[in-house]
Length: 179
Image (tube, rainbow, N blue to C red; front, side, top):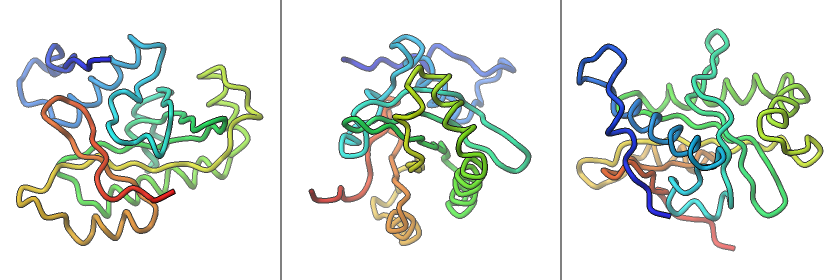
């Protein structure tokens, strides 16, 4: 399926043309999901080692200091799992990691309720959902073309990274695990 740029049709709510790039990407991802039965894995290039399908659940999840830009439900083979996604261009990576960790920990505290929520939102039977969240940081590509050591370390701790592309797609960054 060809991915179009629906975010180009969305202006910022305040009418100004200074919408953050991550808000445009988020609008594009949600728009795609709404038009495609809540699936938006087609927007994530080269993530096939992580998920076969990705279902949009909610955006702008916030509970006090705990937040996530997008919560999704991933499927790989017959296993379903939560996916927490942070979209940022100019935020410190350490802050993004803290946000994802906090969201994952909060969901783990009420794991049964969180799985029930994912099930209700997607129609997937709760017994088929494992609580083994995937954490994705969508980041800007380095202007120098050289990835920072901080990004490599985050990936080494299990965070996956994707990079914004001009076509509003997200491309997997880093080395894929060998099977």
